[in-house]
Length: 479
Image (cartoon, rainbow, N blue to C red; front, side, top):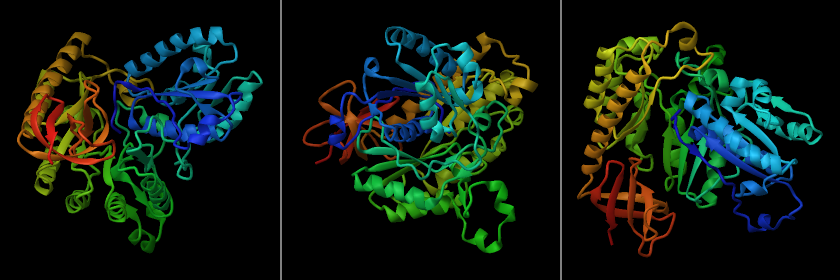
């Protein structure tokens, strides 16, 4: 799954205006989401569950009776950010004795009861697979009990819950198709905080997308820790696939088939997906992408390192050359496809040669953009238990900066290639830098800004690119 070091502050909004006139006596809730897109999607599920319990959303912290932080555990910095936020909230709780604070997500799953012991402000701790139990936990905290549920499930996908779209622009939406991960990379806590990999019933996926289309959404992103592992044969867990009949295997739906089904069923809808795992991405997926114009030509393809030695220590199930071969196949099927990455600097055992191999791989691929981090130990992972964190902090920071600087160079190289070309942009919001400009993305996932004129959010607009930065295309709408 694509990881982000920043957090998304989520504000819940209902489309139905009548819901805004609900009595002020009803309790109000506020959600902040940190980390990956999956957490943002999970917050929408939680909002749906809480709304059915009589709570209404608020966009103002001071109005809230219940504040929920949906947390990330992928890196130490993410957890530190949440702890700082809890300290900020302590003042609110001091002034409002009835205020309840809950911690959701991966950090809750990892720390469990320790959260209640370490963070006295916390009343509620709920892991990613226990959100259905929130109504019972809310009853517990109403009578003064601390409430914890952090059990991992082998079946839970929340496929039957209609998410409340958080901070929605009414144009783009996330749709979760898998949960959990079986890959067991040595640096990653996801298998321990989100459990086994399981896939969601395709009918429920199509139903959710249909509802979005009926509400005039124009683009969806299919989400999973590893979307390419999607496999539905009437049950979610891949480990049971060997036991089923040959007939069910023949009729099973993998990710390529799901992608094709969605693209054909909703031909006017833009479709994206994230995140892919190199060893699981099939040529069928690439072929499907190339055959359907409404599937965006962008692949987020984490590699983590350019060194085979480090890839082995990470338990990545692909080699450097296999990764580069896949890049070549992507270029063959879709020359205009953009590719982004995740990269870790300073993994245990990484020497200067390993680091140079990473820089060399980046030079060969020339990614459009990436998410880059220095290694931090995550308790519970195999790397934490078995590998010595032997790269100094100074060296980690220096190597990370070299990776970031090189990516900046490549990003500018890629955006410059659009100058003089026309791209189709879906308007998502007003530009942050100018109220006179719209902001959207092209199908390669690059941000584009242009003058508003008579266009509106949700419009598809052809834009002729005249200038750029390393992250943004600048242009004018083609009449």
